[in-house]
Length: 161
Length: 105
Image 1 (tube, each protein chain N blue to C red):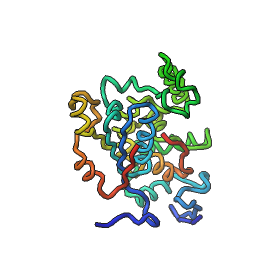
Image 2: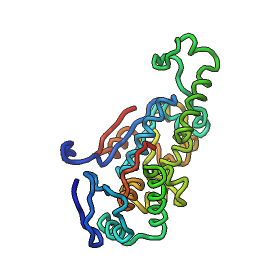
Image 3: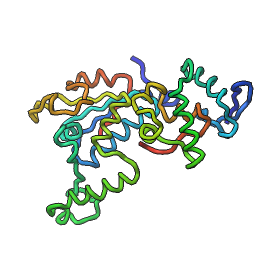
Image 4: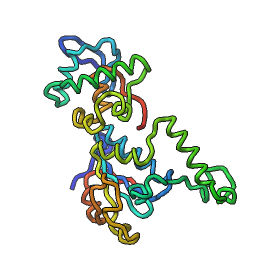
């Protein structure tokens, strides 16, 4: 088996794992996958645990910023836990992103599908949450095992977010 | 920096192969560069994108990202990746003789 020489060969393929279901947990992986395709690399996205919310039909339009347990929000944890705080922070951040022309998650997933990137749901998490393929947006190619994921990722870089 | 000769004219390119001077570009050069990039012939849709790239660059100082191209060039994202398999914004910018577009989306 041969590996890419990092000194001389550019990255040709990335497989990105999205494991969190918060707004700030989902966007970085989407931006990296979309950016990889824009650079002409092959890209796969693998959604696991709460990251499945990013491709869940009923949840994709309701992803929120985590305002508790996030010191970088610069608000006291107790305030962050008040009702409506997460919705408010999400609203403010979504507005800012819209100004910067960063698409909402649903539109972003559709766009990434159009770039030809692969999108997969983790079988163990799908079983754990009692979901099936019908629960996911149409861009999802398949529900796969961790072994299938490593097969898909072969020869490229793996990024966990 | 390096030089390359397209359509009989020598032009300066940066390290990534983008034109140093977008005004040195001609459509004939794009046809020749496209062949080297694996595109047999530039179709009307290719040209739609290249013309939009140049227009945006001269108006805004930077070329459009894939998202902007998909929304405004008249060619959707899916088709853009078919036309420019090595990355639409990047590849189209190179063929259009403008610098690599800045932007993350």
